[in-house]
Image (tube, rainbow, N blue to C red; front, side, top):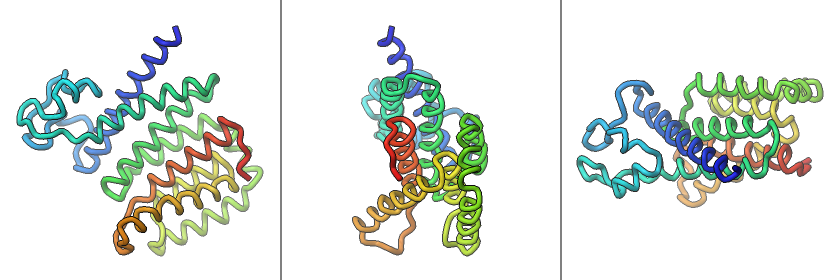
Length: 239
């Protein structure tokens, strides 16, 4: 039975991976997620249903568009596979009500990370409403963190907002850090910020181009997931 459950979770993960890849890419193009139907980036031909099957569609087409034979970007297939594997991994290590929340958290953070990667911006509806829904799932945790560190969180939020108004920090970055405050607590979020900065400086060191702009949401998202898994799933005390 567990094999079938893992198989279904993998299929669900690949489908959601395909969906968020599509949403992020259409956000980049500035078009609706509903219309037009999926199409080839090169020849603009509307894709058939079998071409849209996660992973399998890529394999059946041998990595090339069925119509124009142009190579299909591998990124979407990698995301589909990664989300599918992550779903199975979570099902193995999480055996309680945290599973649904964790899967939703992974999907949401991946989506906003892709949007930021493509455009250096994030859709406000996806960011704000997605975060709000997740916090409702963890209502008791949010209340506990607010009671424990209310004044510190408010003060730090004011500082972040001020940096945002001075164009030193992105609005989406600020909102995501506030989300982290409410989900993980103040001190764990400080670790998230530190880890994000360490990860975020790597591209600058590799490219040695400190004038270029790089997305920060992906590093924040990855850091939030690392600290969340460490503290909530594996019960590792960070601070």
